Structures are given as structure tokens and as C-alpha cells.
Image (cartoon, rainbow, N blue to C red; front, top):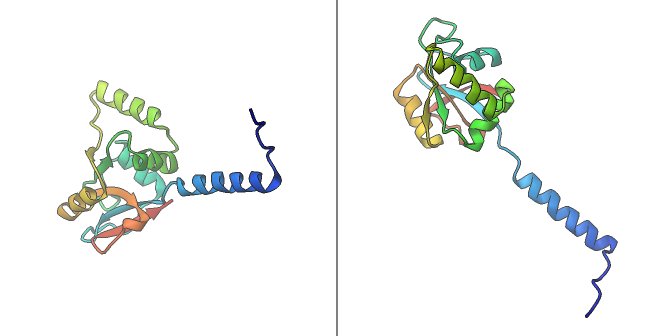
Amino acid sequence: MRAAAPITQPRLSIALGLLLGLSVGSAAAEVVVVVSKNSPVTALTREQVVDIFLGKASRFPDGTRAVPIDHLEGSALRDEFYLKFAVRSPAQVKAHWSKIIFTGRGQPPQEIANAGDMKKVLAENPNAIGYIEQNLVDASVKVLLAQ
């Protein structure tokens, strides 16, 4: 039986490079908050966005009704959105909505499956607000807030 070759400096460098490459490749994409290009809303603060998505506010600053649209529970994009904007883990968001539902004070946002569906919902409802990856922004949506 042959002894394993010792780890040399070049082999270690290659291994570390591969690991770093994998971690960079799995880095989360930048999330942006968007509305329909036809929405009268042009800007929101992070706090206003969070209040809308957590059911603390139901209107935009101009008084029009805000309809938040979420990605499916468990999706990486949803988890990143709540971590970056609301500074809440998926478990904290779930607990928040469980309390709101239990007390009868509201219902969580409608959920959609992907960015294509998000853009379609936003196009159909200028009161809707959602979030997508920045690289998926096109002429159908208006960016209100980035990470």
C-alpha cells in the first residue's frame, strides 16, 4: 500500500483557489425592490418597504394601496430579501406572520414562483410591489430600492 502524497504548497494553493471559486460562485445575487413601470411610486425607504412586506403598512406614501408580492417560502431570493432588508431570518418572518394571522390582524403577501411571474403580476397591477434579482430588471419594472 502506498502512502498518501504529502500536501505541497502548490497543491494547497490549488485547493484553496477552487474552494474560493466555489464560494464566490454561490454568492447571492443583489436583490432589488421593484414596481410596475406604470406605478406612480418612484422611491421608498428601506423601512417603508419592510413595513409593507411585514403587514405594518398597507399604503404607499401617496396614499395608494400597496400590494406586496413575495416569492415562495423557502426560496433563496426570499430568504435573502428578508435578511438584507428586514434583517430577519426565515424563521423570524414565519413567526411574525404566524402571530399576525393568529390574532386576525392580517394575511401574508401573495406568493409567486419566479421572477417571470413577479414581473407579470407587477405589470397587471400598478399597486403591486415585489423584488427580483438585479440582473433580471428590464423595461417592464421600475427599481425603487437596491441592497
